[in-house]
Length: 550
View 1 (cartoon, rainbow, N blue to C red):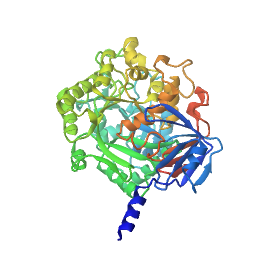
View 2 (view 1 turned 45 degrees about the vertical axis):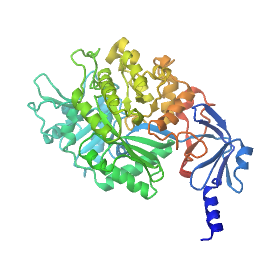
View 3 (view 1 turned 180 degrees about the vertical axis):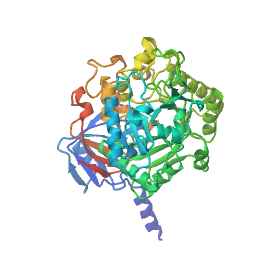
View 4 (view 1 turned 90 degrees about the vertical axis):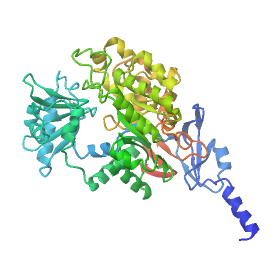
């Protein structure tokens, strides 16, 4: 190569990328690097899927000679939304099982199970999700005997809406080897009657007794689940998700889909726990970015306690509506800290599920000791949920640099029982979004799908109004903890990206970042607050490619 040719090659490589596509006539909103809201009408990106210019039509057109133009006709345009806590395969598997999220009574749930069983005679197990005895106003847990009335011959296993309790029929209990002599496992509880016999509900760690005898999903079933989940995420405008707990099988599928260009949403994955899968997946250290930032595996998901609805969340004092229990810590302090330390020493961000105030304190104590020991606060460790936190512990999040990863729709779903569980004093530190923001914490927002709907607009609506999508309660539930619309958008974009070390590549629409964006039928900042959760996504784009069109 001649010197002139070499210089020409270098010049071409260093020249700014030219825009290939311009989106015009949009009611666009994004955040800048400082997190401030910016309005715009045009967006340009190149063939590589990177943003070249954002602003008014004249300014953007000047930077995009020869580009194709797409006129949005005044539709809304936002950065791609990010769910900072979900379960991708769980979302995909829901469609293949018994759906009880919409059941409003025990009788209705049993009818659904019976009808599913009749329609699926080939299934060896009947598996489902979504029951909630609080909505049924049952005043107790359902029983195996009741479930036997819907299906007795085959085992039935139904996970509660929060994923922290399971309801089994007698056949499933038998296959799991659960008898009156079976002790409660560590971090779990077998619900029993007055005679000591298992009633059919297993809480938290006890669920493993059934889970371990379930038939493993086939690769084909896993692929079908991933396909279904990705399609669903694109429909609601999610361009990136943080998968809160995967194993080696899921990691292999994510990488395979990324290699084939089939991963239509970015996935920031967390290895579940620090056992055999962690040892295998961490052999080469954290995977910070793969396939053009489509996949990352640089975090570990641990679990401190259970959930509030099943009274498995660990509280510092007994439950207000059941003084005989304070919930359950999954591990003793030393055991939990050893897991946290193992992940930290390998260079991984540690993200721990903690719902009760005792669970949160256990994890904050662990972070305080280990961050001081390893000086690794830059890993941006997180508490997943941070749902009920002692008021004196909330400032520790800011002091330690720990990110509260919270789910707005949990508050609006839990409003029917949360204060009953914890009473009027502890509720002041529960679902406390405004308190966290006021002290300068960055909140990474998500949904915990499939426990809640993956639709991020329902989450934004809940954050702003403190109401569910039906507008209940009037005036909002503990409205003083609501956030502004701009703050809610930031929690689902820039700060969720920050919680994944990705704020320099996604989370806002700025030159040099990926062109991840969505087109909406209404402008988010023009609709009444009560309409936010009903905004429809018309198009979803990831890296300059349209992955969904309504």
